[in-house]
Length: 309
Image (tube, rainbow, N blue to C red; front, top):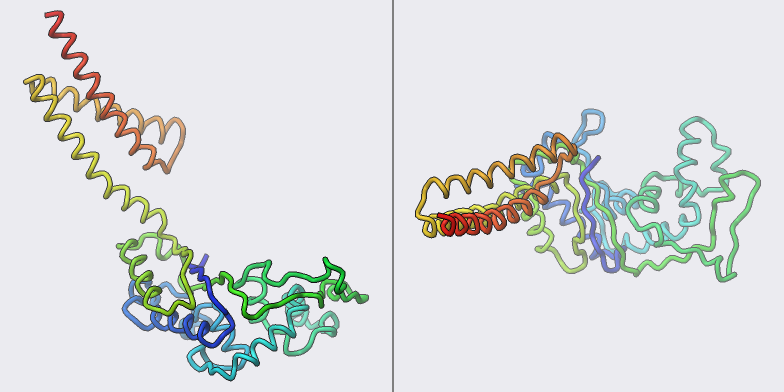
């Protein structure tokens, strides 16, 4: 599966918004961030050719108006793009089936679809890159009905779709780098922060709301290990207090061994008995509880031993 970034875009089909997404692509692929994403080695290539570019609104728009890349888009392309999108919206549910039929040499099922709507880019736009509820049907209020024809594909054509080109929504950017390739990245937090920096340096037209690079577990573990320093400090302080209270190195060492052995038993139960492979957060809570309970029992046991003796 490819890595993905989700943006909230204001006025998404405007030239300014498309330019913002294009600038992010440029920063991502043509700056040192490219090396951090391993795009030279992990990026998908088409037939051994150049590195595939990401799928997003700007790249789709460029292809729909027959531009080589999104950097070639001009303000004059925006009304042409919106007109094409509005024209082909009724056929959004049948474009993929039509393309498959055409590939098999059967053109009959696509007769009712305009020629410039039989494009894979439009299928990606309608069904992948934008929310599925972006194109509501007006037939619920009785203003339109489905266009029914004899063949089954035409039954899915909906001419009652309401489309607002200025409506803001969340859109997807699909990167040409697999999540598996980034799963064991050396510095996942640094990679995430560098992407945040690139996004924040852009205009307010596009705001990143989610990201999926396959580094979530690595980031979680790194943050968890970073928080472990507080647990280590707590253990050291408690052991020093126990030593000052009991004046016994042996007793303090025994308390420390009890804590370590309790964690070992917990690890055995989780991994072997319950077969829980991912439990670092649970173990962190266990460590906190063991430290507190162990220290409390140590003081009670020592005080009881002094009273008996």
